[in-house]
Length: 128
Image 1 (cartoon, one colour):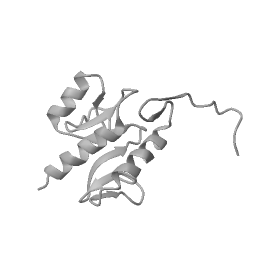
Image 2: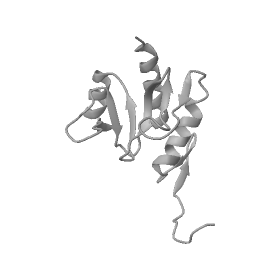
Image 3: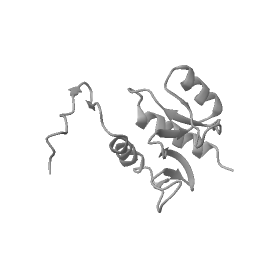
Image 4: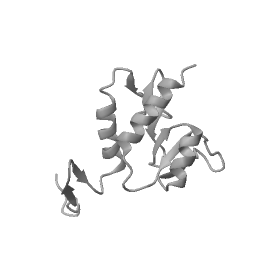
């Protein structure tokens, strides 16, 4: 049932329809829908850490953290570059435990699909 308290979402059209104010879950669902077209990508199952995350060969490359942040795995240098550009910050699963190769995306206009694709390519190259 539609609630009267839910505001209409503002939108505009350019090459694609851009919807502002989407929830983190909805934005991540769209990312997953696109990335799951790659036969190497799987979605984490169960409960706890990694549930719902996007994975390649069991390795997480994109997820929503328990703090409701979109998080991607990239090289340390790339994470540093994106931090300098104001796109995000180093992901901290707990206070004082910053992860060098994980970016928590903060920028409102950041392209989550592009970042997730970049993260999937990084994880594919980073095979043991």
